[in-house]
Image 1 (cartoon, rainbow, N blue to C red):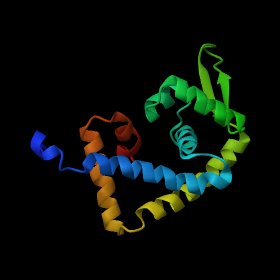
Image 2 (image 1 turned 180 degrees about the vertical axis):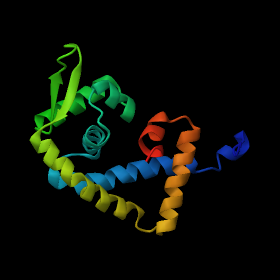
Image 3 (image 1 turned 60 degrees about the vertical axis):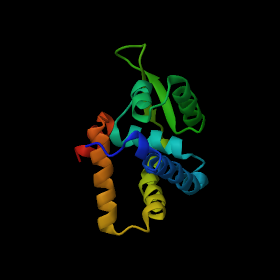
Length: 157
């Protein structure tokens, strides 16, 4: 279904609202994560490694839509903080596997409560039904747009 025409496009705020929601979410997450000395971007890496079993830099790049240089810098920072380690694969020495350190595992255990507090701050003005509808609509839009990562991670729950 086509909702936009070249004439009506400039009156739509959909793209702006989606982009601003992501920016504000990350800003709120940053505030909640500050006591733990990690950023929202680092939070996402830790969650994806822990929750979805993603264990290679290439998979992380695909999941987060980052280039390999940005991912290398992100993994360097997480490694310097003692939260993540890179290990060469025993099967193929060219491959690097990502593993959480004991400190990383401990922090990952705190992330659901930190994430819940941040999301409550972001979405606290919505009723439970509105929040469910928002998630359903976003899932529908992303799935229809061919976002296989969303479908793999959220659509199969």
